[in-house]
Length: 428
Ligand code: IMP
Image (cartoon, rainbow, N blue to C red):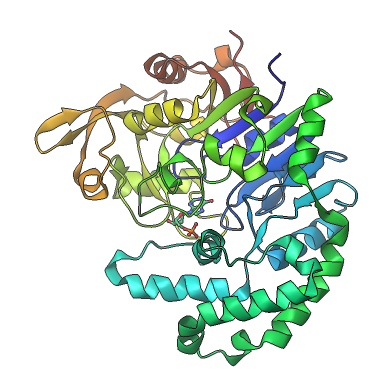
């Protein structure tokens, strides 16, 4: 029997509005698990008019009593997580007894953030415009087999050896940074010892816990971070993050087999955005872009950077659906398009005079692709807050139908605003 667990994955460059969909679903689930990314993610959720931005805690944390799991695939900045836990506690939400962090999760250290900035400066014009949260350097230490993991906090001798090694590995960058405290091994050890006692109640074998939950027919929600186009292998490399944001990352990032996952839901905005550098075929600029950015509030939830905006790219969407085995779609921020008399959808690409329906595998080719656009009439009426499909204006319904017909995947949820109530569940 297929388990009743659900995976939620972003199909664009992150910021698809996953937080809201996950919040909606987590009410109906017993546990929520994060498997990749780190504090580079920012899931924005509005509950009773109050805004929460979660960077590391699974979004299910806002629902009392839900179990929250952080898998080994997450790049864990223990100081950011600590602040997040404390801030939620101040707002009356506690994680005691329901948060579990895998002992194999790698830590993001202060020097990883410095290394992130340093490596960006070395890239010069080819800079990726990272979030500077130390994500790349932490994952690099992991694959180089020198990273510090949660479990190391509880083994003094090994921790000291690892600290020495990691400090020597980043020596060049520490020298350039000119911050002497970064090479202070005692200080780092003390900081980590302090964290060890704070995190002790939370460290667990997350894989075993997820499997136990699944075998006792509990409903687990797997919460993706970032999106398909930022996947280190499947995305627009090198303008990607350093983790597997796609379905494969779920299994390795939690240590569970494929038969733990029931349904796979893909999230797409009704248009597209991207923060950071890299190809974006359907990008728009000028007045129309400014309108879209303003009406969608398209500024990074973690860094505040203005997001680049563009029309929905069906080539990228279809590829993301196939690569992740998406069963159904959630289309978010439909209401942001309300003010447009006419809209465009990118149907295919033109590359060196040829039309193509596939993403060019090479970054320079992708950067040179031009969008082949189809014009679609806008709906000219507000959709904000509508919670029934048949209440949507005719052209808005057409827009949704178009997405599901062209992708051959049903649209199951439509979001028409930031509140929990502004949600349409499409009955088939
Ligand atoms: P990093 O993950 O900080 O290394 O950044 C690599 C690229 O991924 C940059 O272009 C970031 O802007 C982008 N990125 C990382 N996390 C997110 C996210 O949660 N939403 C959108 N873009 C992201």
